[in-house]
Amino acid sequence: MVVMDFELNLSATEFLYFLDCPQKFRLYRILNPLPYKSDFIYSSNRTIAHYKKRGYKGKKYDGIKYHRFFETFHKEYAGFITNQIPPIEIQEDNVMLLYWVIQQEKYFEAKEECYWYPFEKEVRLMTEKQRGKIDCIELCENKNGLRVIDYKPTPDSNDNLSLLFYAKLFNDYRLEDTEEEKFDFEVLEVGCYYYEMGAKKIYDLTEENSLTFERILKNTQGKISNNEFFKNKNSCWNCGFKTICRIEISRR
Ligand code: SF4
Image (cartoon, rainbow, N blue to C red; front, top):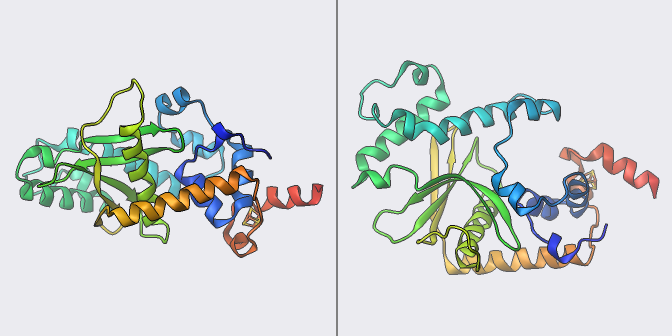
């Protein structure tokens, strides 16, 4: 596979696949070619039916359901957030209840309502070198800046890299010379909300972290450009591309 310069645009999934096993990235890209910018930006979120057709099971559906709940939460429940007892549909679901509790705490702690309401939700951005959908962007209190939040069921070893990926995507988007809507503030903090645990972890975005990440991303794109798609056998044990990878190897 030859990757042209304009195809060096990466999503967070593609970036992490390449770091895990370059062959995994290659197979994924063959199956999912780079979308046109307009298709990517304006495509709506995938439905449960879409994932069922692709053979996904259980947890993936929960992820879609909860992302929808988080996306509409502030609009749906702003009028009830000071109530002592949460609405019945929230009481019946532990993930929703944990989110209610954390949002209620945030509401009471916020100096103004603008620090409780998300600044943006489910925002799709595409720059020259990256693309992705950011789950939530919040205003940081006491700072002229923004915080990128990624919703995840539980922590995993790639959380930090994903957050740095989204922070760079957003900050580069602000600087790129386009005619599209621009944001006034840059990202200064990043964090994950782990919805099965009801816990969040927030970090400052340091210059050192940003520069280190920039080097990793550039290095990755350089290797893709040079067709360095070696196979990392250490990652085979939990790879979803095993079958197609085996067929590929047998055809050579
Ligand atoms: S099966 Fe192994 S070598 Fe093949 S893509 Fe997956 S991780 Fe890479």
